Every structure is written in structure tokens, then in C-alpha cells.
Image (cartoon, rainbow, N blue to C red; front, side, top):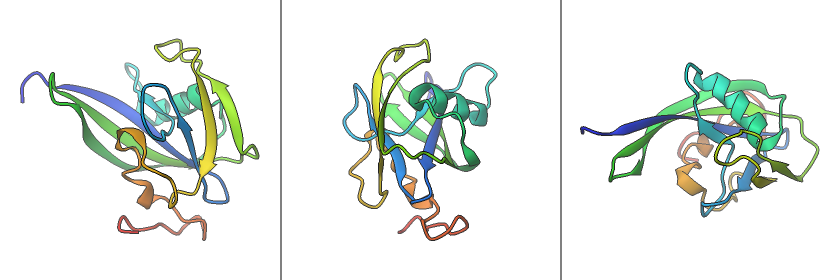
Length: 152
């Protein structure tokens, strides 16, 4: 297809020891979201992951960041726009159950306030932008080496 725009995105599934997943509800989208964003020029998906998580949530210390999968997701048909989404999983020690963070990216969302909270992945309602598509790849709370199958 000619004229297709491809935008590289880093998407972060962040969990804590209880197995809960970090989510927020942001402006302009219906449904839960996870920290994510567009790769900057010359930036790797992993570098974007850490930058985006810090800018959107304020969390600066992630452990065990692991690439889960990459897909191509259709954002819109006309004019054609596709997101090349790089999904990562990382853990964090975060005692707060809820917090508000003001976005610090200097871009379009700069100054927006995101309300963060933790959810059990199995009970979360639908995510915006199909961002929940790979939640089944996350390790379970049973142990760090246990991975749920995509059919769970």
C-alpha cells in the first residue's frame, strides 16, 4: 500500500510484586492505557521505553525490562497510518496504589495529568488502542519465571 505512514511506538507493561499492572486513563481515549509513546529520531525501542515511562508516570527505576513482542497495528485506514508497537515488560517497586503525574515530555501531552493505578490484568476492562492485546504474555504473580500463555 503506497502512502502508508509507519510510526514506531514503545509500550510498557509495568507490574509490581503482587502481579498488578500499571494503568491510567488519559485524555482523548476511551479505556485504560499503559505508558507508551513514539520513538524519537535515533532512539531504540528500549531507550524510548525508559524515557516514556519516566515522562508519563514519573517512575525512573524499572527492573528486568524484557521485550515481549512487536506488531503492526492499524491506527487508521485513510490516510493509512500504522503503529509498529514494541511491547516490553518491566517490574517496579512502587508502594503507592494511586498517584497523579504531570506529563513532562515537552510535546503535545506536556502538562497533562494522568491518574495512575494498579489493576489485576485478568479483571481489567478493555484497554484503549488494543493495548491489552499481549497482557497474556506477562509473568503471573506465581513467580518471575512463569509466563502465562496467550490463551490464558
